[in-house]
Length: 171
Image (cartoon, rainbow, N blue to C red; front, side, top):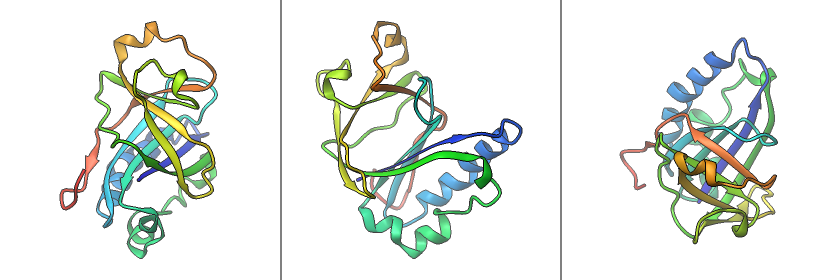
């Protein structure tokens, strides 16, 4: 299951500190939660979507309702809360595990398979948290971006962290 968190950050003065907190404290805390297998963070290259995206490979929906998640991962944003905007959480079932996006690659998210320039995009089907719409994902070399005829329905993200894995679990 894929747990997706999207948000914007509205305070340029504290944004670097927030990213340091998220990348160096929050992600390691998340992957220590039983049922969290791996996490990776992204920044949008596209307009019209939340600036930040985090993808978390989790066992199932119960993981984000667990005490361990509340203690180690969920919340803990009091210092940053006033600057976090356009915040959304989604749960998706996938037809394929989404692998790590390397620094020389980009992640594409689209509303339809036809929007993405690959033969077999990864289908993200609604899996909870009032997620109603399917999405499609693809990973491309960054060098291929100039060939991409973007549409409003395709969002492009660059990785800002490596994929952090829970060493005690799969992924």
